[in-house]
Length: 354
Image 1 (cartoon, rainbow, N blue to C red):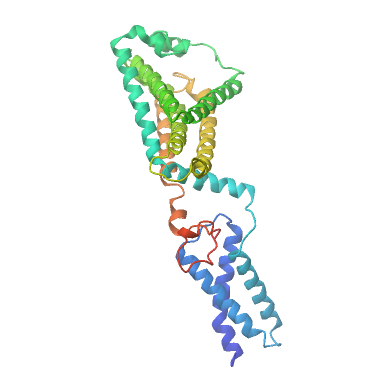
Image 2 (cartoon, rainbow, N blue to C red):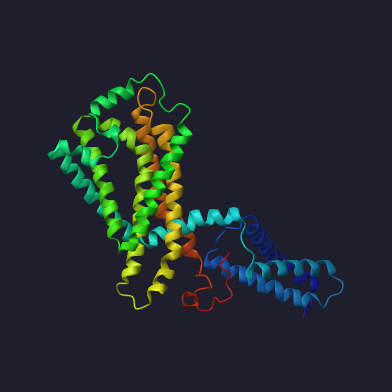
């Protein structure tokens, strides 16, 4: 019962205002993830407003205040029991900045294994070229890589016309298509219990190692870095992530240490594999654009130092994205109700979208 209405309104209004600010912020930022403390405070404000509404309904002289509280409590209730789908743009941003990097980190051991296989291939290809330069045709399937590195660099640096003039877009699309096809194949070969994925990663490493040693031995290290870094720091990690996905698939097929059925194991990792391969496709789109519009241009058109710096910045941002993006939201929000076994006790009413 309210004995002093004016005192009641003066005491409770700050809490109503605070609840309204929180709701306005949630409406403006649909992707906002609330920490556990913020969720607890939000729920407390909601319960307090609902209690105040029950009390104020006995005062017929305050219809405006009652309607305001009804609206406020209704908004809070709808936010807590949210069932609407997020806007497509918001869902896409959430997937890119949270789901993809979180999925990548959840299977980080498979990625490390993919890196190790590729590095082993790099070492093999590098030593082979260093010991037997005549083996180049067997290690490098692309014709422009078979000529002497110094001769190729001289030709490209003294070229008088743009060889990609009017063809940059088609060349970029060709690169995207080819690299995406290779990535999907790397993933699909996980069906061979990982043997095909391992072979493909090793072979890709052989080519990279052979090219690197060939150009370094010819004294063209600066050209090599300026040529490969702008697109390679995105393209190579994308292939490694495709290998990661293939190894995840292989481990699910093998089922080491798991007593669940094959169907259950595949269902368990299917969403993660789809997430990773879509992320690979996005990375390869960017790499294709950079390779067509930047990597193919050398000094004096574009300074090597600028291209190298650009590649290093890309690598730093990629590492930051894969290593850190989505961490804060995971740390502060309870698990979704769809996984009751992991939901914290006492928080059954917490809404995962907040």
